[in-house]
Image (cartoon, rainbow, N blue to C red):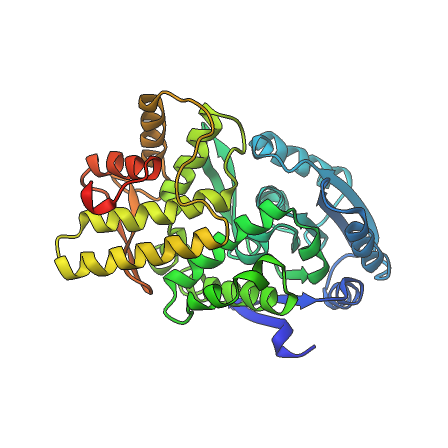
Length: 388
């Protein structure tokens, strides 16, 4: 396998890798054979994944000669809780798994968070392999080691860091991702490109039709480039003290929009990537409002329009369209509440990622809370930010 299909990185002197493959059977057989395991494997997968994908994976596992168990999991945000984690640990116990047993998961962020946390807690860690099945997982959450469950209406309040020993990206999965989920995941790629000074957003503008039509060459490049940017941030800051915080760009407000619309409209009204799209616009707009330098404000506004156009061309939201009558005061209160619930804050003030220019971002506390109201107003209305 050549280097164009593999990314290798180290965490605490341990080697981890990402493999991009068209042949999951061969890749799994090779990878499992290399592991020093006890030949016990449990395969946990999202019940919504196409049967032909699951059959391919199971075939690859059977060829290893290991003892295979499998279990379907419902990929619902409401199941991202402590009960689900304990249920998985009970399953591990019934199978008499040891520290040398292998957990393989195939799913999106919810499945990855649940199985990653359970794999970390059971006997202080199993061998963990992730096969991401959603676009957001493919380009972002499959690596980095963050595991977490929601608690007390706070996203990922309980969690730890547990890095998969291997991530296998199966190209065939790209065709099985629903359209809305596929587009939603592009927001995380754009986020990575914005925080990096190594990537050019013009690539999106030049390849919009190919991206939307899932051109395999372009998709592979976007996935691997996005993962390389994330690796560059978290390997230098595993526990999120400085540089890794930039990966949260768009998430302080994005999570607030997710949770607020979940409460006021319906669960999953916004996909995670859609919320991140809105969150990035919000945090750039807030950066504009909090900057007093005229030339810098002009540059921030220019970038805001450019990024809005890129997101819009991919059918990602740049305005909060609710499709339902909601009392404005209730919406503002909910978003405000969840912005202040964000887990990154270290004082009574929430932290967002301030934008100066592409590749020039940094964490900053929100000091003027009235600006939060102005950002919500901007997202709800067709208005010029410069006149707010």
